[in-house]
Length: 294
Image (cartoon, rainbow, N blue to C red):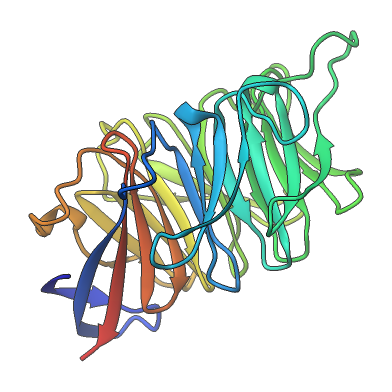
């Protein structure tokens, strides 16, 4: 295990030193990933990975041992076409954004199929394209309808509760690339090329922007929730935002450790306050980063 010391800002805002231990999880002797795009950690510590290029979702323990998998290229339930995002919610459900099939599929933690969600088109042709999704602790599902340029909020019974944006006009949302739900802040999203993130309350009524110390030139912005804090940035610099009344705090740079050798930062997910997973989609690699107060 590689260890190095960096400065880390905890969500309390107090500056503290931390020892970060970096453990490679994947690839392993038995599992290789192809262009993975997303990972998520369930409350029991199970790690879920959207292995996009292999059209599957993996469930693994903290050491990288396979627990169960679901997938295979196809349209049947439990099959995928380029799954782009996986979310293990705070309950027992796992949500998979099945991009090529224009749907979201819901599973148990053991990846047993539970249901399918899609946005029907106005003319009953193929469903609208869901580009991104987020899930609240209460089980509300937020989706970005790329074809309609809008955000939609559904309750746990998949009934529409709120809408933001429209097919045309100033509220049209055209380039939403990342989205997450932070309990203390609400729905947070980033639109490609913009130097800020947008934040909406859970009802999608009050909208505000958070200006970032960021030039907008990066191809992707990482957004993740850690307890009640938003963690955002790129491999060059990650920052946390925990108190709406205060500016964001600086965290650390993942490229500061040569042992990690990131080629492309695709996603991060917090197992708890002292551990997170890092996904390098280009290298097909997953790392576990442990954090401990000094």
